[in-house]
Image 1 (cartoon, rainbow, N blue to C red):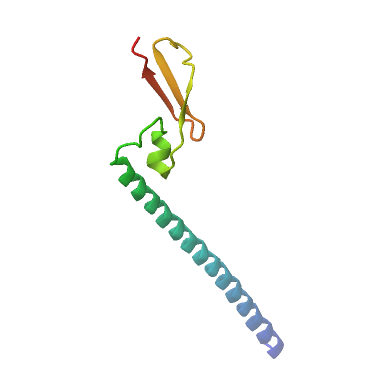
Image 2: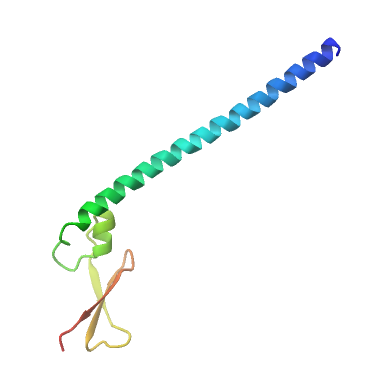
Length: 105
């Protein structure tokens, strides 16, 4: 190889190394972000698990929103599509949780 060819080969090797380094760096950053996200999800689920062990706050509070997020969103009554006389339907406007409760009639 001539000195010019040697220099071209050296520069090509450097370019490949830099490219692989950038890929490895991006891969590490992505993995670190995934670890952070997984830790946040774990913490949220531990909090939900703790709330699930407690009674739901009084009133018509959505149990799904309360347990999963600690939010106290009210359930609102909506007509039951099949048996409005004997069953009250309650709906959460946030998570769309539905509860059917007997009216006692």
